[in-house]
Length: 439
Image (cartoon, rainbow, N blue to C red; front, side, top):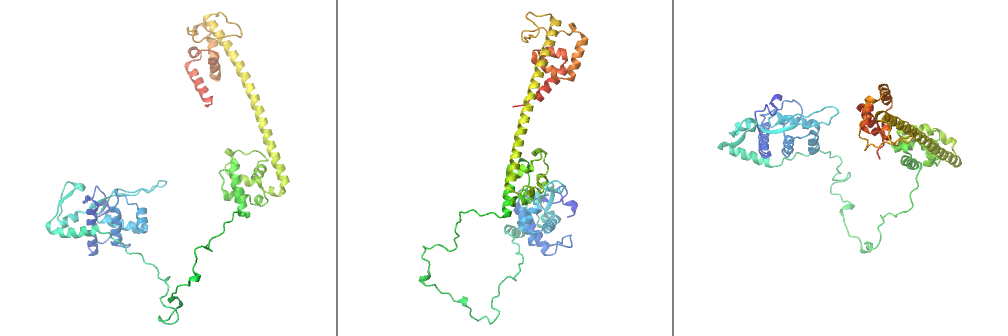
């Protein structure tokens, strides 16, 4: 069959109803190839034979006919080129047709081709098989009486399992049957066997000499083991070294490991210039090599290293204290600022309400309260100065926090939307939700 006819929509054969009937057609094609009635189109490579039948048997076992080349290579111990040759022969004889062809796109896992097991139309014509239906969905309903014997013989062949010839192996490793000197009738000391005396038999109470004594003392590390041990400790304890490779770190600290440094001493001396944040480190091993450099020559005694560790720990304590003091000062400033702004906004809301509805009983300077539930009359913008409203909206557009402060001070959302417009109030609410941390 030509390459264009090796597809399900273009084949003249029919889909095999079961694996056994398909193997019957495969053995019929094998008999034709043995008689020389079928010759592959390729002039090189293997020919039709036992390997082709073995591949056909593996294909017949599949529920979905998707025989990947890697699967057949692993199953039958064949090369990739051999599997491709035999699949080509099965397609040329009309026994396999493409349902969908595999893909080999770059960056995507390769997909195996999906085949359909088909029986060629020549097989039906040769044995007088009658079919019903149309196209590839035809099914057999009978066969010529003179072909039943041939079909029975092919069915027996299909039921048997084909075994491939084992590959040839070298025989140079076999020992010779006869010694190098003398004839085959020569005697050897190994041809006589005898039983040992009872005095040399084991009593069963003794211990085997092959048993090794268990030593509970841990093995002492050499210089290489010490490097790897210190590298593992550094990766586990130092935050900015957690993504590093153990062999690479072991090579960088080879000098300090031999001098008896500890993981705390390595971290303290590496961070003595300035602290290191793990989020800012892109190559931990390179940073460690740069920070250590030749400092093993400077800190060559345990006392010097202990002094460096103490200074590093004191600097961390002082830095934490400075951060805590700065945070407290910032909180006080923010609290004072927020309180003053709230007072100003409360006064502005009080005056706005006073202009709109007149002074309320009990309103005093600096003691303004709003009852949002009982204050039902809406804010009337016509009673307010348009220039003042315009200025208030311009200030709110520059700083949305003024709207949230006004809402927190007692201005209800209905009046806020009338005064600041719906768009500015919605923006202020969204901004407040975004800045509010979730706990």
